[in-house]
Image (cartoon, rainbow, N blue to C red; front, side):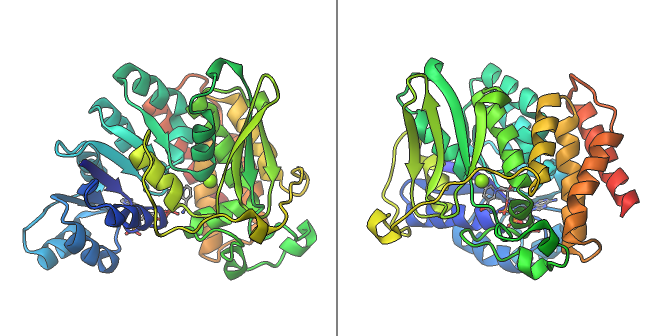
Length: 381
Ligand code: NDP
Ligand code: MG
């Protein structure tokens, strides 16, 4: 029995993680869970999975939840609460599916506590990949990817000669606007942006798929997770989202992982690794039903966020944290109707230009760069 601490339990990845656990009650249990403010969604989940510890966003939500639950579970709040859930003594593994750079400290704390990490929160590696991977190595802790592309790469590396790896190729669906020109993007609405053709995900990452900055963040995530230089990480547009990513080796053999698009597969693999279990909730891939698959080069003019992300990744230091923080604020402003879709990228670019990078930042410098980038973007909106 693997006992899990789940951060972001009410979110898109969080609820799918619970769906995997629900299918295998003999293998997994929920020791602790954390969510933000969605009490209505959390209550039935707490009732069903019976965690011993629940962490929420703030004191006010904690008071409301206590009143509902009547003292059966321990309830904590804030970042300290999330860290308590991530390092909970009765859990074996952290599944970090919280949204945003707030996920970083809980990951670091869980590594220090020796927990296996299942990582959906890509911001952890984008903002502080060097610290996270170094600490994980020191602690002898595995960081197992949940992001589908990284899970595909991870799966395509099993049993392979790691020293002969020559390239990672991440697939990108192109998001909700992949067939639109930049001219046509001028007047797109939030509702348009949230209609992703293949994946059903949280609002923020769905917008990030439309600018392709999500893929840029994933390149940085892959760089740290697999310790591969940026020159050896490519992206290919693949609109069907069947090939989830590929790994090329020195002999030009390419190994990929395929499947119908479902986050349940990478989530379950992270929980069962190195083993596999049946997954009844997903469907078989019959390639004859799909017929044809398409691949296309990324148009950098059309998707400038791609160039920004590679540049921030290569610059390293605090730059990726600025890229991420600026984008979080800009996307929220777009979702709140404060700016248009095409204003997201220039805001991120301006934040990167405005920032004085620290080449070898510790945790504090990263968090300061994150705060400053947020304040800068807010001042520009
Ligand atoms: P959602 O927006 O659906 O869920 C976010 C979760 O985080 C919710 O449970 C939310 O709680 C919680 N949360 C947000 N802020 C806080 C806070 N301050 N304190 C505590 N909890 C908080 O996001 P997704 O599930 O889409 O994404 C989660 C992560 O996984 C992201 O890093 C994303 O990039 C990554 N990812 C997601 C994929 C997907 O398919 N959705 C695919 C690959 C990666 P509440 O709603 O209760 O406030
Ligand atoms: Mg992904």
